[in-house]
Image (cartoon, rainbow, N blue to C red; front, side, top):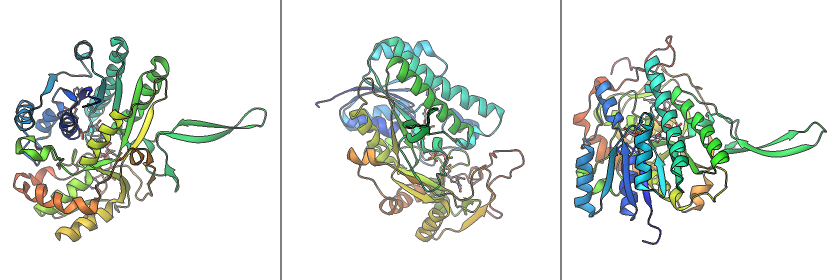
Length: 401
Ligand code: NAD
Ligand code: USQ
């Protein structure tokens, strides 16, 4: 392989990080996972499990070696809490790139209680800052690729297409001239979780300016699907599939709900429009981002990592038509606009060769290969979304589930 790189995957045991680790390893890169398995511990805390039977990390790595002949390294480390261990690993491994997935990523979980809010802020902001600080201290030339979120933009843009990170503005100077500038797109987060991702952006901007770190921030939409080419090779490599009220994301929840005969839970009017990307495309984007680092001295490179936008009620109707599932319009436990338009630019990834998997091709496959196959593992009591954004709100529970 021409451009073989050593890549540390922070959070490589998670839903996005595991398939990305396999994909990069399959492509010939040397992959090392860093993870504290906090996501598995949260499963225990919530009494909710992945719909798919995920294996312990050691079994996953052993199975990958058997299937592919390739080795993936693993360090158990809390990136947010153990800075010295993180720095030692970076100094020993000397990576060319770090991919950073290691954050608490569920908006409802981040809103559950003061403890969950504080955990999310401490974990996410410290994880990101520790990585940046350790890269500088190591003195190594490392490209950092971070998984951010479309949610930093907020979801209403008055018809304008959301640009990739930066907004063109024109300001009037004191002497009356008009000057054009580009600024970081103003953030408008909708949960404590999304707020930590907004804060991450400032950390990146600062370390890029002060220490000339090479950083790519990927503003990713909601990831749907489960399998990638590599996770499909052996059942022991299977990816996680969250369906519970905190971690399950909307489209995967709808597919699972339809498969187990639970009403499809549309929050409010279902007029919320969101950006989506299939997990296979998500891992491909990581590879493209690693292959295309920003130039030295270039500002933080921001890509919108999404391929389609959809309104929540349209998704519910689509899944219902496909499966015969019934739809329930439930009280919205979140504070968010009832209806919004969303138009997004994603030219950068398309120009680098991304060939998106559409909902149309992938949806039916997902229903039969995952949602129906593992429906027997579902715990219906974990489906309702019970975290509310304020004390006055009601959980999103259908009347007669
Ligand atoms: P996940 O919870 O499945 O995976 C995150 C992984 O990071 C877990 O394995 C967890 O154990 C690990 N981790 C968390 N804190 C850690 C710490 N302090 N030290 C070491 N490891 C730690 O989440 P995911 O869905 O794979 O998301 C990964 C990243 O992608 C997140 O940053 C998330 O914000 C972003 N993202 C996800 C989606 C999505 O739809 N899943 C969409 C957009 C962006
Ligand atoms: N929704 C329903 N019914 C449900 C679940 C969700 O109507 O049963 C609605 C929500 O109210 C919301 C929308 O669907 O309007 C999306 O919710 P979600 O849980 O699928 O997505 P979100 O909370 O935004 O978070 C997910 C990931 C997060 C990532 C984000 C990308 O968990 O890590 O950052 O998607 S984005 O949405 O583009 O910001």
